Amino acid sequence: MKQIFVILTVIILSLFIIGCSETVEELPVKPEGVPEPAVEEPTEEPLAETAPIELKVIKVTGENYKFMMDGKENPEIKVKVGEKIKIEFTSTEGFHDFVIDELEAKTDKVNSGGSTSVEFVANQAGTFSYYCSVGKHRDFGMEGTFIVE
Image 1: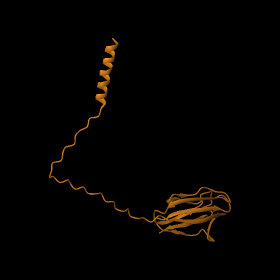
Image 2: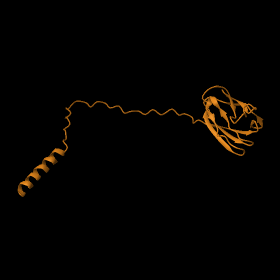
Image 3: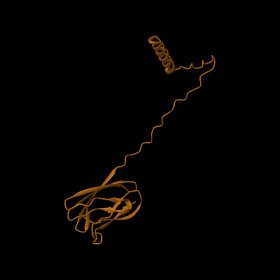
Image 4: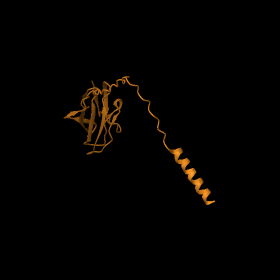
């Protein structure tokens, strides 16, 4: 009985090994005198160099019911279409923020001595209002003009 078991085990293992082995296909032989087809090397075109977008930093402070920049109250701010803008906003008096709805630019609200910032791309030309959204600060004159040319 042991002899039959050993023989069957050897046969089954042999069949298993043969069944799991890889079959290798022979490649067709190229007839003599037939030229090989020309293979064109892919050419890499250099990528167009684009200038990195520079960040234009604008520093604005918020005081009691007014924005200040370079000594001017609620100044007109001008930028160019496509410019990446960073508004660095500091509150020197009171609780304020800086908002431009159409450009989806809005800082956090900060208390006196606090600073915050917002980055955005001036992606549309036009004249927009920037303002403080806290309470009635906008109604009290905390608003200016933001022009994208």
